[in-house]
Length: 115
Image (tube, rainbow, N blue to C red; front, side):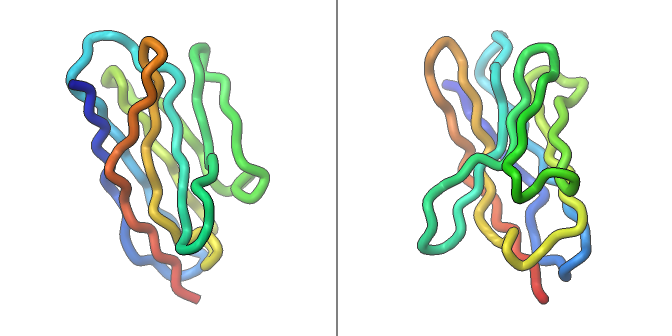
């Protein structure tokens, strides 16, 4: 059973930084793509950033220039470096991955940015 586990969320002041981590277990295959979504209260879940094979990346316009997604050295790990955080970035952040046509989600980690 494939599981994605996030860590690194928390409370930070506006302008601060956080780094989210996601590690997958339960498979020896490469999960691709991997990415991060977020969901704020009363809002739909939205794509934040995704990394694909060859390390191509895509970002939501709202985070371009502030967030960086990267793969870890360990297989099936992904990070999200978040800088210059804004209160509008407050949400539950979910790790996401696709393996053999199946979509997997982490349990989510809360990021709260205070003004």
